[in-house]
Amino acid sequence: MTKIGVITFPGTLDDADAARAVSSAGADAVALWHADADLRGVDAVVVPGGFSYGDYLRCGAIARFAPVMGEVIAGASKGMPVLGICNGFQILCEAGLLPGALLRNAKLHFVCRDQWLRVDNTETAWTSRFDRDAEILVPLKNIDGRYIADKSTVDRLEGEGRVVFRYVHGNPNGSVNDIAGVCSANGRVVGLMPHPEHAIATLTGPSDDGLDLFRSVLDAVVNP
Amino acid sequence: MARVVVDVMPKPEILDPQGQAVANALPRLGFTGVGSVRQGKHFELEVDDDVDDATLARIAETFLVNPVIEEWVVRRVTP
Image (cartoon, rainbow over all chains, first blue to last red; front, side, top):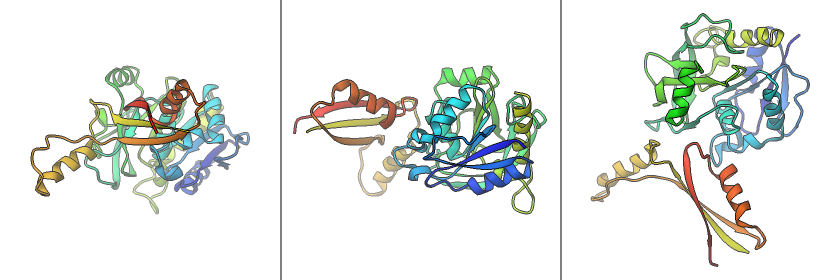
């Protein structure tokens, strides 16, 4: 069975839901610990949301140097799929695996709501099961979710189709070009602020739209 | 021991809503004449005398600062 690691840092909140999403998609969820430089043989890694290290210094700035992240960076360089959600997205940006940065929301409010997204890139390791331009509804909950990068970087991301998810029906936080999620040049590393792991069943979430991220990666590790 | 100060500011082109909120609060508090406010960070490091400038620059650039969004100045302060 495909093994997908879910990292827990001090202050991580959403590791349990991420592991549940992995299991629901039909993979084996493997708990990874921030202090262990060991990926335990997983085929892909989810960096879940929360407030790693209390968001001290900058969101993700300290987590980026955790022993497990050295292994994640090494794995990503060999094509291992990595998904960063919310704080996980911030960590991947701080680690240099994804371009740009996440800043305080434009209106300074913590935003907690169900958010519509459009899937703009269905070629990544984490979005192949979606239809192009599909609109999905997943929870969003953060105060530091405003995506920013310099203009040349944004132009490059747009030109290369590396904006994976875009906010639709309202930009919640002032992100440039309504960007909700981006990917690495090879499409193996994806990060987004909204929480697909909270939208895997209508009993507990606004939809089950998020499940297809975790199903997509099953294809990606079988067909790298 | 020497004291080193690292001042960090959001790049000028980056929207700083926290600074704007401070600026917007000032007139409500009766303070007039402040055109704008930008909010940054100030670090004070106590370092051994053998820590050289290149090391300090690396501490700032690789950890204290995110060069994507911030600019910074490192300076030694006379004790």
